[in-house]
Length: 219
Image (cartoon, rainbow, N blue to C red):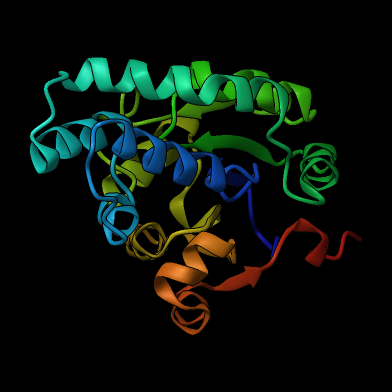
């Protein structure tokens, strides 16, 4: 898996952190508070979008009175307690990132989430300080994670050839984008993505697959 790899790019939610249930609960509570029916397809519809794109999409889809920026603030406030105090890393995440650091491989994060929200959780789980950069659509070319350009921009920023990058993510549109960018991909079979896309489809598109980082043998 790591042969000729010079950089590893990690998603956060559902990949490094076991946090997808936080967002499922937030979505349902948010909708219920506004008397709206929760759309079971919503999670699939927003996969790969930036945080601001999700806010704009939700604003238009549900004709919400709040602006996209106000929606982001509401969602952040709803999620902060869980991220600050309760969200845990995926099993083996710290051991794997420590291993990669010792091997001299560059580690970066590519997330649709905000740096402000994930920072404390990553620090608490011991996997923040080893990251050289944290990229989102806000600071890497205004492109969403379901675009190959997002990953090509990261490769350019960290000065690593795309073919020497390995990306860990849990959602199907991102795996497709990573493949189109000429990078290697490893899908994390998080329950949310398996429920939405099916395990077979996720496995078929990725170069590698794991349930969590304990599946990776460390030499």
